[in-house]
Image 1: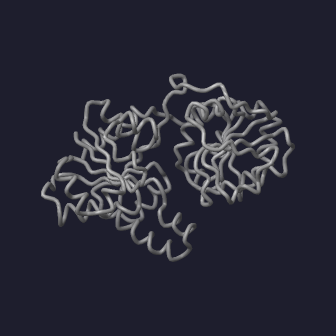
Image 2: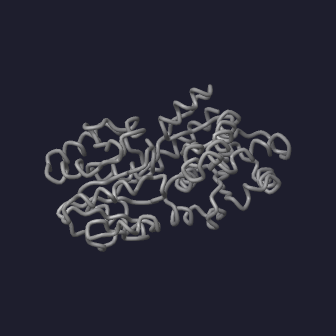
Image 3: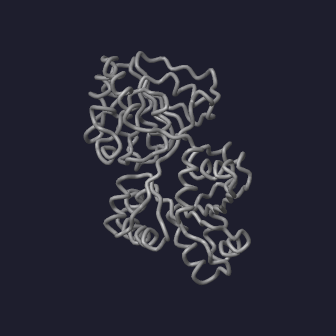
Amino acid sequence: MKVFIASSTRFPWFESQDPDEHMKFAPYSVDAIGANIIKLGHTANWAGWSTTHNPFKLAKRIDELKPDIVYSYGAMTSLNPIFCRRFLCKHKAFKIVHGWDDHYGRIWGDILGWPGKVAMDWMEKRIVKNSDAVVTLSYELQKIGMGWGVECKYIPNGADHIEDLPRADTPKLEGRFNIVYTGDKAKWKRTADICRAMQKLPKDIKLYLTGRDEDYLKPYASENCIFLGWLSKEEQRCVMAQADAFVCTSDQDCNAKLQEYLRWQKPILGFDGEANNFFKNGQNALLAKDGDYAPLIERLANDPALCRELANNAAKDIPIYSWLEIARQFIDYFTSL
């Protein structure tokens, strides 16, 4: 099986064909999927924005590689493989599978207002309906696809076993009860909700946020809302190992951090919206209505038995797969096409 991952990402290292380099910079998502497809004895190649935004460059690359599958990823460039196969490629014997991770129209609406939403709603529907197949890690997107007459294959995010992964000795967390948030803090992720909640809580209940800092969140920095900035994966695992609870604030039912959180078997807080597709509120997670996290945090901080119950139920209810297992699911699905 030859798989060509055509993404809209602008990271320069994404054009590298070395799987170790992909796992160094991004040991998750399409980087981990491609690297583990190679481990399974198949071929995977990557191309980012510098190739995929230009249909002529993309068609040339497809003709050189002669893939069986072109896996399109990202809103801005995922119509291009469809155009290339129809008008530019000599090699046409491949299936176009779209990896649909985010609700593009909603996100662009949050960022750019109604013009962004209208434009990306149109593009999103064209991508989903005109690809040969669609893989999604969101039950919500799966429902939207069904409404458009497209049956999307569900394959979740993966997370490797934490016992096998190195971690650093610092930084140290200092709260009586420590909540951890990892990763992107863009405005549409609603990260401000959890930061505001900390203003209502005792100072010995602390929130630690890792990842690139955002200017709009700086006013929330305080004794119990602590921005650690970008950390190496080893340092991030050190932080996660000390967490008493994790939080995912975006109104989504899919996010790579969810599977990573679940590996640590600690209680999880989320936004009471699409996350109901993934969790059972009150049984294996606590979901905050309108993003009001403060009372839920107080419950967890004062009830160790509830923390254990939520974590144990999540471990029983929600299967977590390693990235190698996820890659195997992709190969099985690609083969079926």
